[in-house]
Length: 68
Image (cartoon, rainbow, N blue to C red; front, side, top):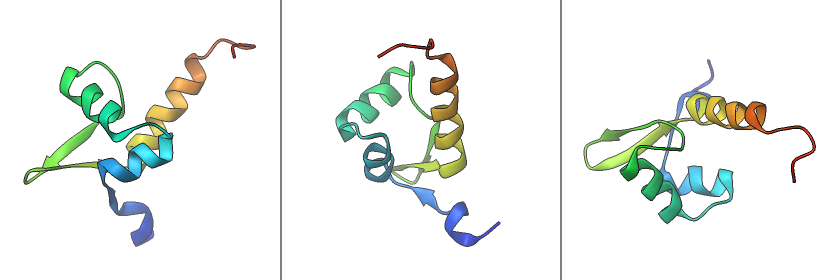
């Protein structure tokens, strides 16, 4: 797997990819109810790109057809 694909993503990068505020991503994680799975590296939260993409695909699969 190429190095770029294995690189961990920051909260800011994930928020930008999902087009949501960082605060929303932080709240999802704090509440443990939604969002892609992240993990701590020291004090920082990091996300694996494949996990973010998997989560996003799940959201798309759960969306009813014709929903706005």
